[in-house]
Image (cartoon, rainbow, N blue to C red; front, side):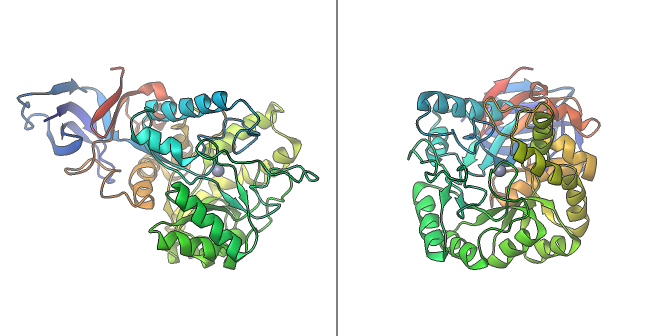
Length: 412
Ligand SMILES: [Zn+2]
């Protein structure tokens, strides 16, 4: 048996309970077997003991909106398959490995990452988090996934097994076929673009994309496969369309009204705000690093998103946690929790990135809290995230990372 005792930490268990000082967690063969006071746990006869005095032990963090494949800041994937694919693959692997080193043990890719990377990670060939890939996002012609210049007829092509470019589809039957194809390629859930976006060249942010019928076709196919649909939505009309189609996960929700927030609750859907990317893009905009059209659209959502998070929280919306950060060498992912905490407080920010995301992933019986019988995804933090949530913004403060009982980082 493989035994590991994580000894004498302050435990934030991911259930919302108060932190428990001087607590120990016993891990056996990748599963949490016992959680008890440091005095009562008893030393195992074999295996390792890691002393965590003065540190905070938590469930591994999760990110419901990553784009590991978006290694170019201005594109959802590499700009074209003519780019150096070797460089692309290496950059993607670097993004995956950095996320685990920063304490993220499960992530959902919101489009662009080929599911082959998730399989290679599961096989242990890449030292990364558990990855739930969406594969290619589905977009209408001229929608958020349409990255062509106005007079360019050739969409970015996917490279199967390496690069999952957006697919442009119009009409319910085309959407249905595209959803089936993504599920075939290994998508854990299907991503659709239901509104305009900041980084796309042609569409207005408030444009409403896909008809309810079109999205329903994707929802039906996902549900028949035991899966669900997530939809990129910045505005309330697009959220309402997505909800009417049965979409389960609303991404961004940047400009939300109260009625729509209530409707998310009534539909039993989740919302995944992405505060960090807005901050990062705002800095890029100041430095003139993003195109003019993106700067204009960013202004519409940047200051509005925290207001919408507050409104959603008060309406009782289940708030997941996502970063949406782009580019090569993606880091500082934990800053999403700092930004969220300014609106809903540190404990709720932590819960959104542990318990709520686990529910969204339908993995709440496996991950998201530190309880007997759960998989041993655990991190130790130098500092007290409830007293100072900003400690999570710097990945160097994550001193111990354990996924499935295996130690991937130890800088204690
Ligand atoms: Zn995104």
